[in-house]
Picture 1 (cartoon, helix red, strand yellow):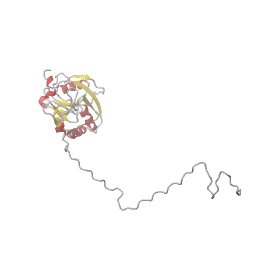
Picture 2 (tube, one colour):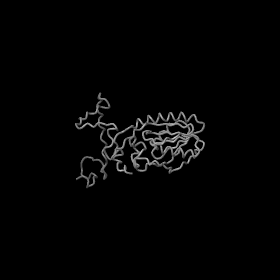
Picture 3 (tube, helix red, strand yellow):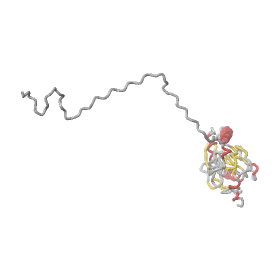
Picture 4 (cartoon, helix red, strand yellow):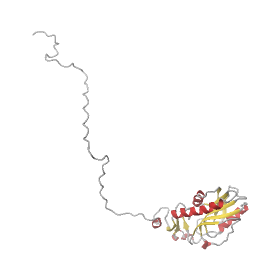
Length: 261
C-alpha cells in the first residue's frame, strides 16, 4: 500500500473537521414569532364571579348594637347622643365661647376638671379661635359609686397663675352643683377676676347647690341630661367607659351593688 502520509491512528477517508477535546455550545435558538395583532382591548373584562348564596349581614346603627358583648360598650342600655351629634354641639358651644373670649383684654385660662372632662376639654379648646391658657384640676366626689358624696375635694392643684384673669371651668357634667361650687370658691381664693362654667352635660333635676358665677362669668352647656346615670365621652363608672365615643345610659344592674353605699 502506498504511504499517503496519514498517521496510522486516523482512518483514511474524506476530510473531517478538526478534533477538539472541549464541547462547543450550540447557537441559541431563534426567538419565537410575535403573536398576530388582534383587535382585543388591552384590559379584557374579568370573568364574572359566581354569586355567593348565604345570609345577608346588615350594618346596624350604634344605638342598636350597644350593650351586647364583652367590648367597651358592655352594659350600655341605650345611646343618648351619638359621636356626630356630640361633635356638632361642641362646635356650637366653642363658637359661642370663642366670641366671648376674643372680647377680653387678656387671654383667659381654661381649667378642665380631670378626669371626666378630658375629651370635652380637648375637643372644645381646639375649636376656640382665641388666645387662652389651659390647665387641669382634679376634684373628686364620686369615687367608684354613682352618687355624689356631696363633699368634693381638690386633689390636684393648678400650675397656671389665675390671679386677675378670667377663668373658664370646663366640666363633663354638672348635676348637684357641689363640685362646681367648690371649684368656684377655690378659684376665687386664687384671685380669679371672673369665672365662667362650661359643662358638656347639665342635669338640673339633680341640682342641690345654687352656685354663683363670678364677675362677668357665663354658664355654657352642651346638652341637658335626663336623670339617668350616663357614661362615655370621658365619663366613667369605676374608671370604665371613658373611651366610648358616644354618651349612653348605663344599665342599672351594672351598678346596683353600690346602692347601699
